[in-house]
Image 1 (tube, rainbow, N blue to C red):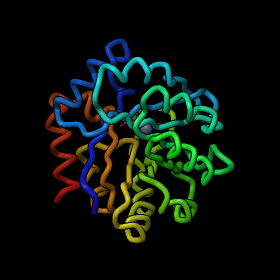
Image 2 (cartoon, helix red, strand yellow; image 1 turned 120 degrees about the vertical axis):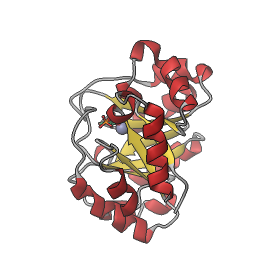
Image 3 (cartoon, protein in one colour; image 1 turned 135 degrees about the vertical axis):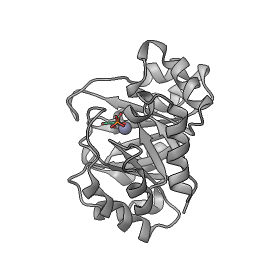
Image 4 (cartoon, protein in one colour; image 1 turned 45 degrees about the horizontal axis):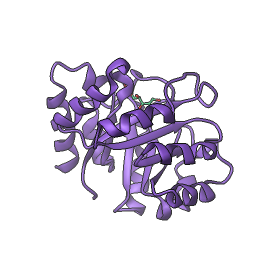
Length: 216
Ligand code: DX5
Ligand code: ZN
């Protein structure tokens, strides 16, 4: 099992102080900074794009884990690479040529991730997994923070973990102290969480608890 990586979703942070929010999360023990990119087309919400990542880059050394919830993700690879993204995760449902997109992301010097929505079967990932640095199994319908965790997605995590023991498997959506055990037991090691970290009285305690659940 690869190491635990805890990735607060900045979608739940204060966008007017994004750099400070990133530094705050890193100081509390975060491993990744999860940046939710939404285009109002692939998902019914609009957030941020490469220009904001570019402004952020000189203000943080944190690992920028960019989750692209956009149609035709291939058109943004150059911009995100130039902006300084560390990992670009696209949705399987949003592209017609995942293999070419993975190559393009790698050629631009970034790590490549592929995400699947709750209704997409995990089998579609298998042929691409050897080329991927991370697979994201969504545990809510992408588009908004604060939704309820879908435990039924955990069988996809276990199936993927059984086939790919060393793969970074990320879960995103509704992760919280009351379901982290289920996710960790299924084999998830990269934990994204927005509301449960940012709204907690002690975000640090939640990050520590998530890490412990993955490592135990
Ligand atoms: C949802 C995003 C998530 C979201 C998670 O489409 O991909 O990263 O910010 O937020 P919570 O943890 O509040 O569900
Ligand atoms: Zn996300």
